[in-house]
Image 1: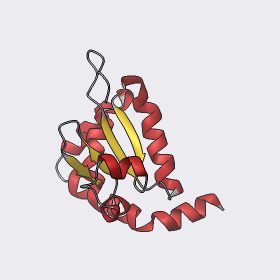
Image 2: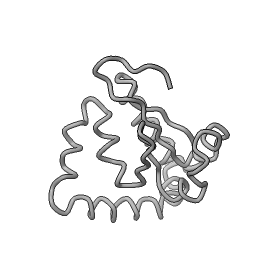
Image 3: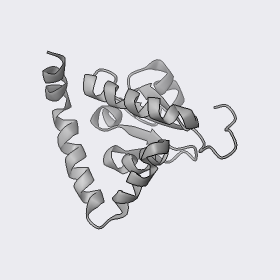
Image 4: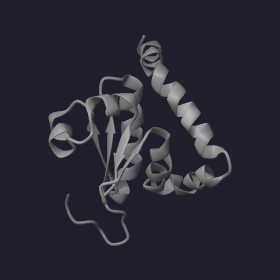
Length: 128
């Protein structure tokens, strides 16, 4: 990781299912919006760079849910990563505060789990 500009968040790494069209599109959407701040990089789950840099994250883990590796080494998975991802996107930071509202984290986990379970079906429907 390179130096971080003054005022920018240290770089976090989003690991996603690179074989899923929905996951790829989502990761690229997030990356494009976070690039200005230099606060995020993305890596496909089954890539050699991911395996070399983050061997403690298994293919099974990152094929089940996106993994966000924070600069301090902590790993947030699935819906639990969303508030931190949103904080790293300049125009979406305020949305991250919604996850602090009562009931939002459990609801976010249910919605994320449904999307994750059905992502290939959704991905196939979108790409037809």
